[in-house]
Image (cartoon, rainbow, N blue to C red; front, top):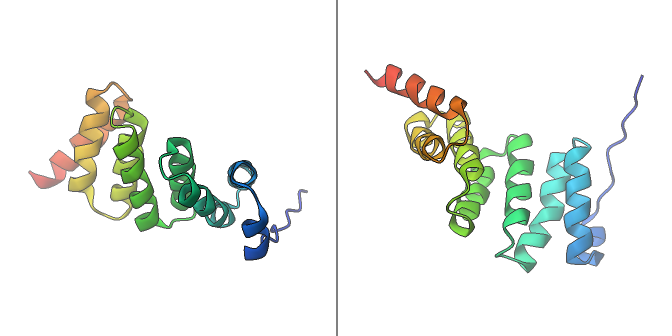
Length: 134
């Protein structure tokens, strides 16, 4: 039996971290299945380094894992702005939109990801949307 304790990450602790430590702490929190805390910590990173694509990716993943879908969408859109050729980012944005029941919008990003060769799953998601609208 594994007992997990919720981390006690205060705003004061986040404020005292440097950006590198905040990034690493966010990674660890997300890996430890504490996405809400990870998102709080990672907000410091993207505020300090708004052009850091890896930070936006991690923030988007944290929000998505915490079912905070609108902030996840925003983070993935920012990631696409920074890395427009990232098929993974297109898929992630498509999934965020799908989970918000915005399947037609998500299909656009799944089409882009499929065209970039990301995954056969993207093409399948597009087929499902196309079937629903026929």
